[in-house]
Length: 246
Image (cartoon, rainbow, N blue to C red):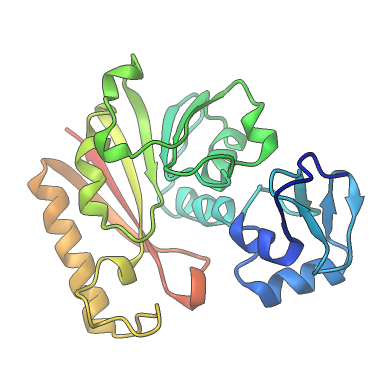
């Protein structure tokens, strides 16, 4: 079954790594309920070891990861129609955002990630997805793309959006959209986050207000903020901010 017999990982752990489950408990529940398919075979043992590059699906799920459901909620909340758009996905990871964009009619997605081999196989082989893996986007030469895009979506962790947004703007055409997933725990001052969880609403408000000021300072038109319909890892409330170039 596995494609790579050398590097194997527990199935429940791999589900979490790929964003198919928010934590180990959810991963185990999905596996035990028969909802996880590995290389076309249903596996019901959470401890079953599979190759890290195996094709893994959660049956009945619309997107390759929870990120797809997150982004879909934002597209609905902002009434943003991406049909025919050329997009960029910074922090593509498993590809949930990209999968959502394509299924909502996007023409093409440029995907960027510092990792390698994380994206779902169905997207890796999709000609509409142009991958830049092992890529630190902060140092990326945007002229390599050869065109300006209609929409940039950003989902990054362990780094502030303030370090990623400026180069992201260079990808956008005039009137293009920037849709950023705000994870306050990675934007807040050190010491305000305990165990990876940020619950202080005053700190969260401060993070959002500071980002709004930052975006406007870059010349972007701030279009609003909406809470993500799906919470992040460890239950952190995340937010989507929409801005426009020009």
